[in-house]
Image (tube, rainbow, N blue to C red; front, side):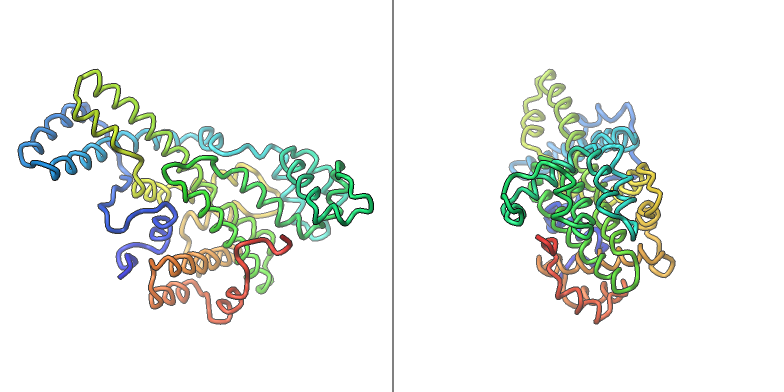
Length: 372
């Protein structure tokens, strides 16, 4: 039986994204963290009480769990401090640059031309390099008469076209924001990429069939997980910092048992998963709001997702993204055997993903862009 009877689809999916063992005790982020002067002395008092009641390997495991829980009391406070600062949040991701939002706005216009996009892309250095690197691959260079390297961005854009750029620009932006290292959650980088791309492709398809702007739906679905990457980076930094401080204290106190316990511990998957569920959607909305987009309502869509606005009250774009989210999450969880067919059908029906929509989406390749 799956865990969906007591957890939301979203939480089960995030657990799977991080790699939470469903059979292990769950260490959750607590919304109300309190700090007291008694916290440090209590660690020693409670440890001795536990030792008196336990023995052997069981005592060691209990002590490890106890130490991890106390460690995360402090990690939670450090993490909250980090995530409460928009400057820290913004610096946690690759800087897409001040000219990137204007480019997104331009790409959303129905009558935009390559001549209009040329100067905008030229002002975003990382994107200019990505585009030139792409068009200098053999499949594009073979289209030229000389086969020489393309060095001019205006020439490069002619090989791609508007439709390809509408997919490439948000995809390349997202790729740059994926953290280089997420150890010990190495699978996160792969899974967040697969999920975000699949959701963006599904959202674009749903939008196009419903007369909603497919480019905006694609961007909203792609960028809604920016907060996931912010949370994991700041959690790992917070954990490393707090653990280092606690190790120094334990060594200074010559407490070998506590030192050994701390050295044996690693970042906790369930705590990270709960932190992502708690903060990620709000952070994504805040980050996109700072772009101050003039044409496309990404912030409004992500605000409704963060607020968990009911489907009946959502705007059309938000509804599309929510339906894409549900479809892709269900698909991934069924494949991972974390959701049974009955639960999957209920989740899809609740999200308004009807039979015809499912059939349409099942024909899509959600693993790559169509022009690749």
